Image (tube, rainbow, N blue to C red; front, side):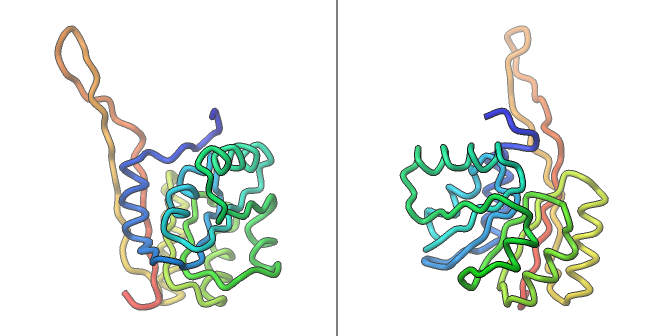
Length: 176
């Protein structure tokens, strides 16, 4: 799975999904689904997950992930997030955004459609700032978390840590 930006590191996914607060049987969207690793985890709790990505390769990899985990409750949408949100779909309770294209408009549409909880993962400072400002404007901003994960590895018979790129986890909810 060699796709820029993915897969989401397990520790980042754990914090992001905790913040998302998906409830049993809810409908969720993974916008910018990439490799489908977050989609797969959401599907363990959700009744239905929409996996959305503009990249054909990402949708293909997500389909492989879906087949490998046997999740029947994942629907894949190849296209832009705004096109998906404008199309007919079931009411979404929670949305995870792993992509940054049109982030402000996507957040506006999600809020206008009554989404309860939204989590944005951002590697770019500009994306984090845009998401925070838009969530504040929309009255849903709860918090932003700056997360740095480092993994141990052996070096000359000893243990050292190698850091991954830090990530911003921005959480918005109708009632924080």
